[in-house]
Each structure stands twice: as C-alpha cells, then as structure tokens.
Length: 114
Image 1: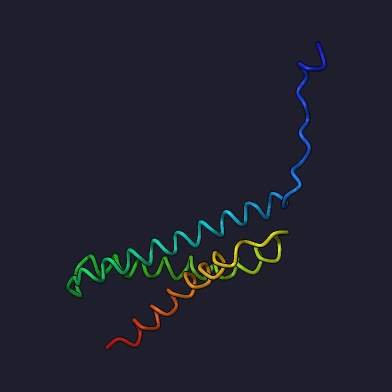
Image 2: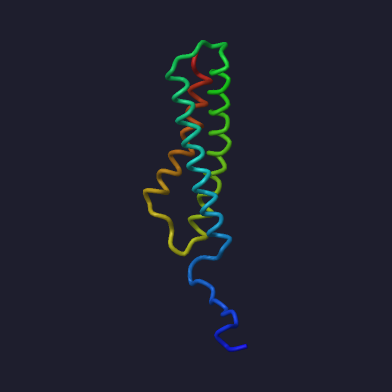
C-alpha cells in the first residue's frame, strides 16, 4: 500500500473547541426558536380569538415555550461570550438578549392585563 492510499490525519482546526462551537449553535437555535414562538404568539393574539377558543390555549402555549427557551438562551449567553475566542457580533448578542427578555415582559403584561 502506498503512502497516498493511507488516510491522512487532519490537524485540528485552530478555532474554538468543539464543545463551544456546539454550544454556540445550540444558543442560536434557542434564540431563533424563541423568536418564532414569540411571533406565533403575536400572530394568534392579533387574530383576536375568543377567550375560550383553542387558539387562545395555543397562544398561551407559544408564550410558555418562548419563556422557557428564552430564559435558557439568556443563561447560555454569558457562557458563549466567555468561551469563544472571537465573540459573536455585538448585534447578534443584543438581538439574543432582547429576544430572551421579550417573553418575560410579555408574561408580565399578561399577568397585569385585566
């Protein structure tokens, strides 16, 4: 067998460790999922369904999912920022924090609504 036929070993990439890369991907997925849940909540509420309809239950489910996933995204944000050698762009970080805090504000507004 020639040397070329043997599999060449690749040198590890000079970037971040795989665990931080995976955490960054998971963080972004959490942010996007939270945003989709928030937009779905807003879309259902803007359609103005009756209070006892299944759509209201669905909108509350979207809000609960956005709250849980948004809080998780907020908890992961500092870990991602400290763990990466090159931090994500500032706009992405601000968007992640705003999207993560929005469901908390929406829950407070829902509680205070008469």
